[in-house]
Image 1 (cartoon, rainbow, N blue to C red):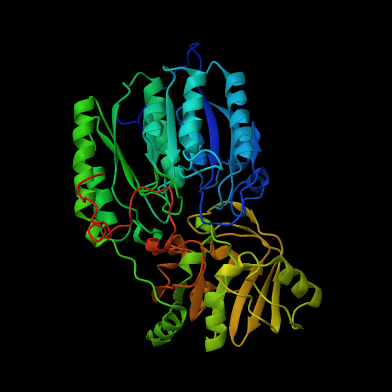
Image 2 (image 1 turned 90 degrees about the vertical axis):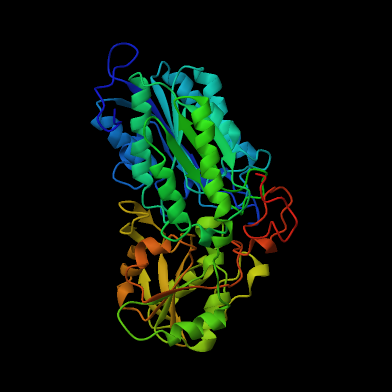
Length: 515
């Protein structure tokens, strides 16, 4: 039976089915400076605010997050949501373990108070690590399993960048991850996972599961699902499904220096032997494709020269500052690309954006048309570049409040705080106090600029920007400017990760047949 055509769910007491809704997301970059505190989950620029209980039902519907899709699917099936907790923090350094424990215990207390339940839906990221726990999601799923017992179904939605573990697979009845990068199917994944959970409540058998680790790491720019070989591998996973079989692929977050970092496969089937064979077949496809993963990037000066060489036409040439992606733990204020653009006088270019509260305050105090002699950016992480000196002309002011229009943040009520538009030597730059990945065109438009009409658009993003800008772009160039979201994984001082970057295993003498 298709899970989208389910009979009305019936709860344990003969009434409507009661499903707990929990969300707790963080993507951990081990190479980002500092520690992610509990407070970081309260100010997730671009995402809904931390919500407890009924607040989930007020803030999440209509947004793009997985729980929004799960709630819609549950409502369509006539079930009753039991909202517990939802929070997200922007990707950053390892989470303070005490903060993690506090939120974990709050989730468990909420679930305990809500019992009896018919099922638990968990929206997790899959790449959270704390200062003491590498497999934070595995720990959460295991704790929920211990609380509710072996019989209550647990289904989890995960980010495509999950660093999947055997513990996650063993403790949940089913794991379902985004299938797109850019992540334009977050809500869809939540709905799909909820329909699976409803099927279990309705009596569908729980599948056997098999787990495999792909034996290499992938940089983020090699993970785009619209490019080969990832597109082909995802298609093969979907074609292998049916007749009670399913494949969940996760591409891993390589900037988490943990033992489980890397792509992985969870295969589900009616029996263990079929699940193991399915997982092994998928692993063979990934191993055979290793040599195809490549993500070339250009130094800033070369990228700017290449951008100028692109023939004129509609739409901008997009310069992706892929290594200062705040969606991967970047500080959002590195200056390598901005300095090169200013030095080159890249007339008409716009960079989105630099996080610099001091510059925002100075620009707003001076007002539009004024010149301010401030140093811009380069405050958070001196190792990734110095500030860009002024003077800067203040072009426009914005309140930073808008509704998401792009596929990543669609429907989200976004409050960036006050923002400003500065200009120097023909180059404009949006400046805001907070971090947010440059994949939301409403930020640009709320300042009165149409991105499709720009000659050059620089974005601090690795891949997600493609969801908003790929169709309008004349050309897309990846820029090798300094930042903590490193694309050349051979540069990283790994201590815990066990898998080498794709394409390096033969050179290092490692056995390419072992996972």
